[in-house]
Length: 154
Ligand SMILES: [Zn+2]
Picture 1 (cartoon, rainbow, N blue to C red):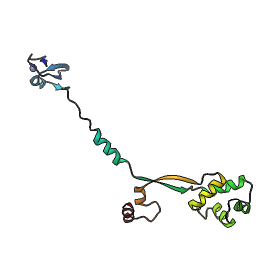
Picture 2 (cartoon, rainbow, N blue to C red):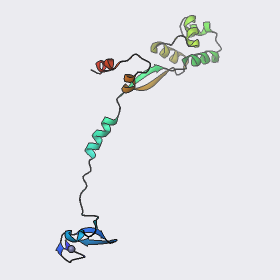
Picture 3 (tube, protein in one colour):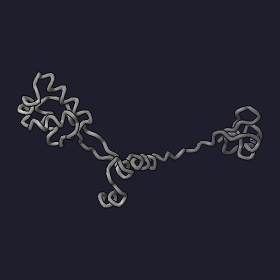
Picture 4 (cartoon, protein in one colour):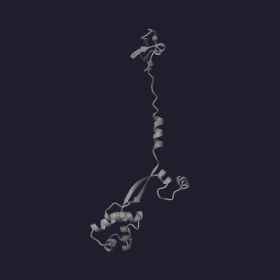
């Protein structure tokens, strides 16, 4: 409350920019310029923003998979130990043919086998990947239809 800078009326005042000057004016006189700040409490819509953020996060699941360069890693691990494939096969308790195939990349180890080799050799053969469900839906080389996606989600 106070008196208007223009007409002197004692009423509720608005901060207004009139002809380049900040003035405190009554409602009527504020029409001569641009009202800057009738003090209003801005309602911050934080609750709604939070919900939006949650929905924005894509659903993802953590998946373990064998590293793509497992064959190189196995070969290097064997060379480091100066073993031939036969010794190496014995060392990791697998068939020599399996070791050979793993090294050439013609056999991709199962997670179980990869885990065993990883522990035995002290090398990293399993990586954790975060797989987004939407990527699965569009297909990542797997035969995965939208129907499967919906069924799986239930
Ligand atoms: Zn006035």
